View (cartoon, rainbow over the protein chains, first blue to last red):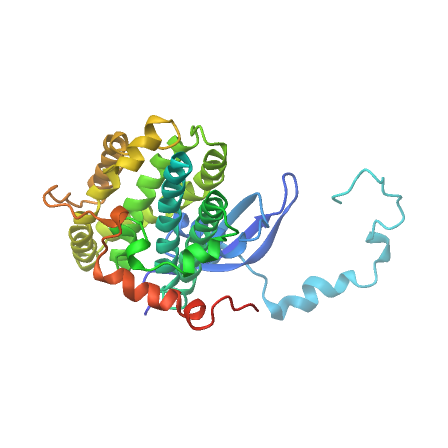
Length: 95
Length: 252
């Protein structure tokens, strides 16, 4: 079948209340309601989530891989940007 | 003894309804229009197999004599199955499966909401677990009725013709056998005719929004609860029961 009118949507799942949403994968759907239902059926079958976001893939702005050098390489010798010199409280579990 | 027999028949009929629709929906696996819908239908099928298992395990306990749910599922013949006829109707095209599913989801939502109040604690517990699933199922099936009905002229025609085909089996959902009347009197079972007006409302509202027309309530086909089935059940059982019939009590 040709999936006429179907668009790719990116799916983000929140595993528990308060946690950040993580990219789970993508689904095809014609609109947001269908995207949400398809995401629920594909990615939360084993109780993976408490909340789902779906975003039309075309609305995501991606950096260009060709820009990788100028975007990311300047950070590679700046060790002082890591927060590893601080002690993390044991109570802060979700950092 | 009579009392347990009444309860057994009642629970068995609920198990049969769930089992037969689960098997029908499983026939869509790897054949649905696209991947996401394939998994959605399989999920619903598995929910219904789970529900069938709960009802049939309970029925097996009531029956005693070390019987188990599998005996009830795989070692009874067509005339011993008491599912209503709508559950065994073939999938047809996607529109027909969705029409059948929408009618059943609307019905089961109303039915389970009542069964939660059953005087039988086991039935009440099964209803509480199942209602969450059915609330999702009806969201899925009703959104498809809307899409197909209010979609293209081809999708509208297909879903309207599916509704016209399956309509004759909807009347049986609101019929009561003597046994079911007995169960209702004891507050164990549900008053089926009492579900009709709310079912009509759910169906009419979706039909209106989907620009579909409601067929006339003319001749309604009944008989499933008495074991009088359409020709389709036997074929389905021969498929479903093949392994247990060929290799009784096979284990793996």
